[in-house]
Amino acid sequence: MAIREELWDFPHVMQLKVMGAADAPLEEVVVTVLETHLGDFDRSMNLSRKPSTKGTFVSITANITVHNKEQVESIYRDLDASPHVKITL
Image 1: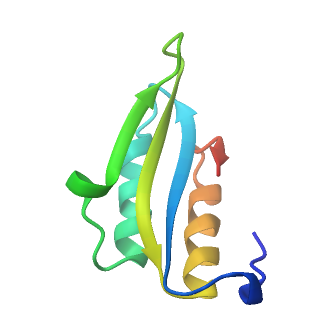
Image 2: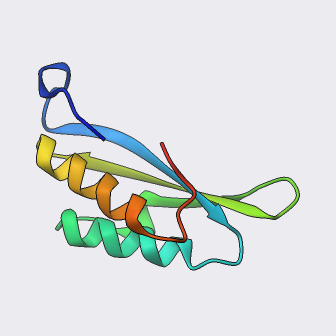
Image 3: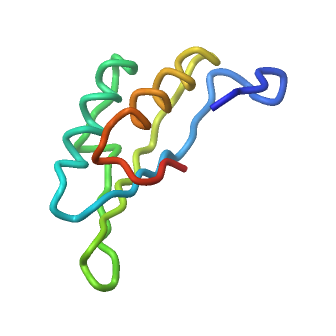
């Protein structure tokens, strides 16, 4: 994901949505990536999980604060590298 830094105000509060198969360890992948890149990430306060209507997929929503372009790009790169992640929004 290429970030046009001039369009962002940092620090930036955002919702990150990640989707994957319901039987995959998606939440653990998301938490690991966010804890790696965000020193203050608290899963109990900033993470929610929602199954799809048929229960085949799950979406994880994380409320995060990013501080620079490199941090955003690193988070998306690491999530996209996981075989458990189908879509990152």
